[in-house]
Length: 568
Image 1 (cartoon, rainbow, N blue to C red):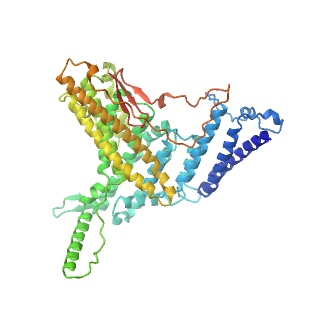
Image 2: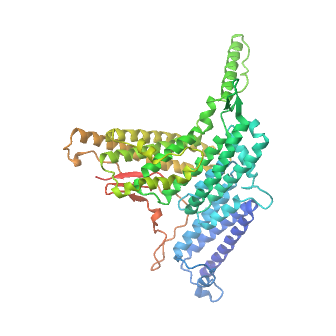
Image 3: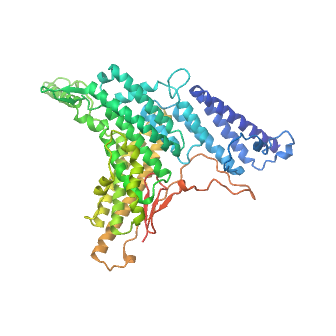
């Protein structure tokens, strides 16, 4: 009867789950079988959920006894263990199967280093974060297999690094030099270690990045030597200078990837809620500086000023003149040789520009609130700011590049005493308006990319980035409206100091954050059963950080950029 079917559903679920783990343990050759097993396990899980009232006692000894699980737990040190209710256990298992299916689907589509960075960072930073089982299999799939140094089921990491350098427009002549092979191997090691770091939980990621920055600093020294060997040119007076035909250098490529890790390091501080509210201004200020350095490292910016681009433009002008001459003579226009146009702003550049505009808007908005007197820091906290600045950025200061900034630089750059609050709110509004425009442009291009993906499964690699951009767009839109309204209120108060605050224009309300469809089976508890424990919010998961009775930062829509909540 129905109790036998309930038992069979649980047996099949366990069998499918074990088959999933066995297939994933085989590496890339087992991904296809793993996805079939996951689908079968999800089907049986649905049947098991439908028979939650299953009573093992009705089937006698030939049944699954849940009490045996307590006796089969592996020995472990004493620690607090959360015992899940039946409903929560089903939901957790459903979430794990969903994460494993997403891993098996998307990692097989990764073919480039940039895709690998984007996939691993978005997968491990998703909310809710994948558990230890999916992250362990991700680490295993990234690790070199037993047949050689191939990762992600494809080429060796050194081949991925060379392909990335070629896309960065480093000349082939420089990559063909003998010493370039040793440098590529060093780069492959630090980049691969960074990818493995992203498979750990957020706290361990941040600790490992601190230690990894020393290794990156050593590779930076080798990158500068490579530039000297490959691009050093002496003029007629014997003065040397570095000249690259495309404008790309080994040190620039390495700096681009290094700042990618540094910005991730700063983002983890927000996700772990390590920063106090009064530290946000200096965090966004330093982050703005790092993003500016990385934007200057993008090929779409330095290539149009290079010699190779000028030669292409000259060739294009000659082809256009020849075509015009042939047209006048009545000859057919063959169009000449195809010439590359100036590269359009890449998706990465647009993302960096959006983040930079948000950073500038945030510390300008905080400066305006500080100047207005709404945002204030008690003397004890203010006295600790120099030490906090050093603690937050000391790992970055050890690097050769980018040049380290000091607390005095921060004070000089954020001194708002010469400005009125309305001026600072106007500046923050301009920054948020710029961020909003760039996010809209980026979201449009990502939508076109996902719709035109071939095969369609490739769209899954950009879906997380598109969702992240939508979160940035919501934050930029709300903070822009807040800045404009605060500017209006500041002007009115300056003109009419005795104006009743109740007569001022109301401040905007927080935007609604749409719930993301995760595919997780959410099971309500049985009548009279245990209450759900999955809704418990840990301190690091708190969506709102209160700075004062008047200021709060709401991270509901975005993990790194909050909506500023001002109450009067």
